[in-house]
Length: 479
Ligand code: NAP
Image 1 (cartoon, helix red, strand yellow):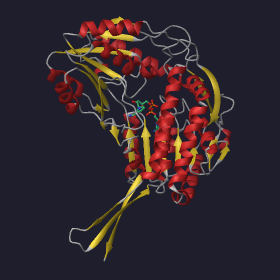
Image 2: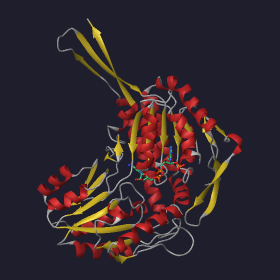
Image 3: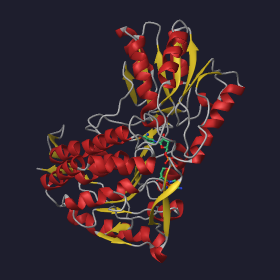
Image 4: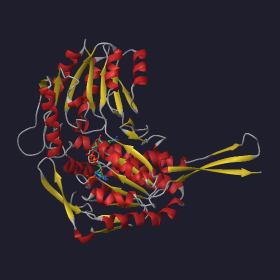
């Protein structure tokens, strides 16, 4: 599968080498070995990709909405047909177990199905001005050429949830996947071509000179929109860079999700939800439960059940049968998780299961549960991005909710209770863009995904997703 994927840049409908023939290596995180050499774009390559997107924009915007929808629908079907191959490729470059890669492929393809249906529902309004003297007509038009920068943790889905609505809306684009995991996006290129996407609509640039290649594009007045998924730190820099050109910007940034377990929670459901919210993607998800905030009356029981489940998980290479937890994506990520656990233990936390990296090749980290964690521990405020579940306790409900909101982030919160009044009170009070009530996963192509506070702005998926790629034009029509 790795051999079959294009390793060059895809610009204006053609595969081509990076300037000077430069390449970089993509590693398998389970072994640390290189699995492919990919084109390493320079500044001129980035500009060429934007040139192609700009040159194609006008014609692409004029295509029939149904035609754009049909392209997405065909791409959805092709991804579904090739799910096994795509999953293997994803596991090799990113590490997650095959079963999880398959789940991401399905999730990724659903954005195409969803937006294939939305492409024909782009509509405006018509009304009579209050004084009756004119007619007010509104219409939606594509924003224009977009730059899409995506992270390594969901190598395909973070791309399709941008590409899907952009294609549906009639925008052209330059996509820059993460340099740790470019292969899934490169594999998507062939699928889009086969699905009938015209040349120049989708341009893909891989690079390790990321800031140097991206900044001139962001500052280029021909670019009309920047959409970014990644860390809050990089997001802040990109918002600054985009200010000069007053770009339309969407930012899907970091999280620090609270997972609230109230005294009356169904603990079976809470533990199932915790396993999903913590262990999906080996904990390397922006939506991962980062802080378990559990009522003191059930904390011990919850911790021991969670530790039992976490401790029983099988670690190993994601391609192997029965493996439930793959390696972290790189040594830096593994070392950061280790640092956060050591800091918590120094602050007084107890390791109930796991506690450190696994010896040997690859960047494996044992599923870990920490109890008696004080709020002074760094993992109360920092995104862990690994299989570590710290448990904090609270007494009064108000105290639990205040702890949940005591963070600069606001992507998602989870809460478990059987009391409807308590659930409504808590989800209305959570300062997040999304809430899971008695469930440990919120991602759904039909729902608006996104955060508040330092988790960013803009929404992906749902009815809202396509709006990010549309401008509203108003026409005043005098009679
Ligand atoms: P990252 O370091 O911010 O990288 C994300 C993307 O930005 C990569 O393609 C990266 O390229 C690129 N990038 C890095 N520096 C850049 C610069 N100066 N200018 C332009 N682009 C730049 O984040 P990550 O480690 O890949 O991803 C993990 C983060 O993403 C976590 O914080 C997670 O919470 C967040 N995330 C958020 C969501 C959400 O929807 N809210 C979803 C998934 C992940 P290189 O790979 O070449 O460095």
